[in-house]
Amino acid sequence: MPATTRTTLRRGLAAAAALPLLIGALASCGYGSEAKNDEKKVAAEGEKLSADTVRLGYFPNLTHATALVGDQEGILQKELGGTKLVSTTFNAGPSEIEALNADSIDIGFIGPSPSINGYVKTKGSNLRIVGGSASGGVKLVVNPAKIKTLDDLKGKRIATPQLGNTQDVAFLNWISEKGWKVDAQSGKGDVSVVRTDNKVTPNAYASGAIDGAWVPEPTASKLVSDGAKVLINESDLWPDKKFVITNIIVSQKFLKAHPDVVEAFLRGAVKTNEWINANPDKAKASANAKLKGLSGKALGDKVIDAAWPSIQFTNDPLAATLQAQADHAVKAGLLEKPELSGIYDLKPLNKVLKAAGQPEVSDAGLGAK
Image (tube, rainbow, N blue to C red; front, side, top):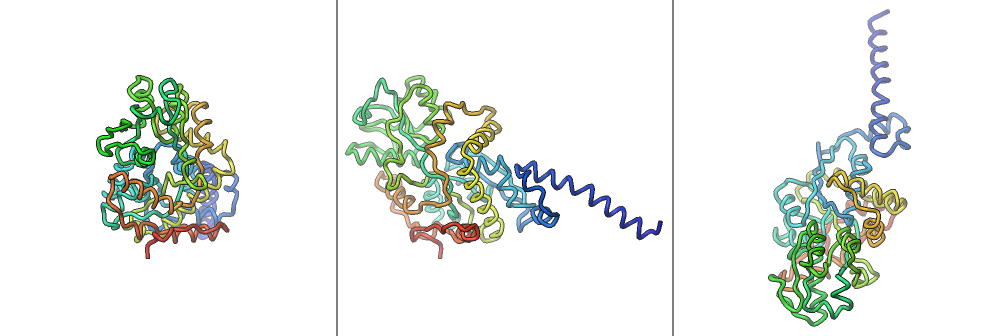
């Protein structure tokens, strides 16, 4: 057999052996039905973008289910192709902002208050909000033996996750609208606001150390499973029952250097939300599987079944509600009136939405020029 013929044969055999591995890799990302596409698409999906890796941060909360499901199902990685997704979880917004500022992560899912604080503290030089993720999923739950009406909250001890976090600001604003007084820093006043990590809030409730909590899911439903009752669903306090609970942020440095990666990531987030909304039961199970992988323990059916319906998954960052939440923080004395112009850059997201045949979203006049 001539040498050229042997070489051609060897190359053909190598290609034939490699193809099943490529197809198997795609199927393992939860896209088995799409793994039958032609070789050109398989090759394209494996191409690396302008960055070797993208480092993602998010919370192990159901309000971050776009990240949980997108990571678990491989939807985010699929859109990133050969650019590797590396994920890290955080328990609070300030620590995630610190990681972004320290260049330890590139993109993050995070609440509105940390987004605002992070933008203001760096004088608008570090982060941009590039998309929405979720609305709702926050409740005031209380001990029904001690609190039966809203007025019964006076004199009681109510937990929020952290001083100045999104739920803390919301509760302080609600207290102010009731005409009650609370010192924002100490939490002392007509109601005692007790800043308690979500991980220990159920134990604090069980021990009687707190009488209730204004918290995100799944903590709210964990407390309900322990006998607490929902007194307020925060969605009921907002126009159209919508308010941003989770944003997608990116460091400006990364956005400038790797716009193709950011666009691909947003495409993955949009496809994840589409899949979540089309397959709620599968998505709920996927989020729970990811939570189990992260913590070693899945949520009980009673908890996740109660929590899931209260969260809306949306690409819209609901920018007008971010401005309202900033105003609430100012009124509570936690923040001087911020200059938020430029906090959003929704051009990459709107490009993705337009390509997908979906309506574009607004930055409420707070977009980067």
